[in-house]
Image (cartoon, rainbow, N blue to C red):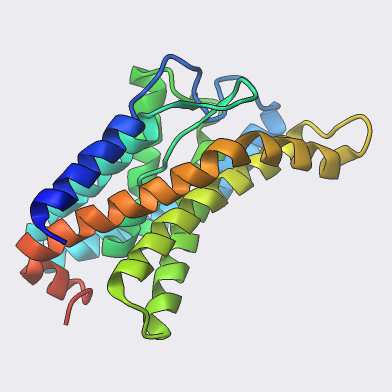
Length: 243
């Protein structure tokens, strides 16, 4: 595929994913009961600590990778700030963490994801400070772990690079929303049917928009990764992503 065609496809996807005025899908400020808000935050702490060590090691071994860390964070910030209305009145958005996860691993993206979510909560009223722990756990902990595991499994099965990148980004996105649905169902079980009924409701709300979004994010991530591979081969080799 030519670079011009790749750029055209990327721009087309960005137009499709342009932000709207709908309310954000990140769990909003004050929405979760305190016990759940605190619990999800505590669960994130070990991953953030490991991520800080991971980033420090990466930068110490190759200072040139700082620009790629910044790029991965910016990519996640832009994509996860986009809002796509759902048919039920809620909305969904990409996560943008698959690319950075492939480059730097899941724990490093836990740190970048936390920074992204914090900035969005403060600057864009997207999410919230009291729900920062829950949003971080779903988007910056579980999503990257699933993306990283998917990438490694496809590569171990001798799958092509593009397929590994696509599936990692797409499945990391989808699992983020599955975990968000679990979080909401745990906090707000249905009066009839309890947790299971509530989980089915929340998953149904997000499935209509999130599945095509995950596919779009997978395609866009492949295009960006290919661009990096074309102009940053030395850096990708240092990360053991290219032979």
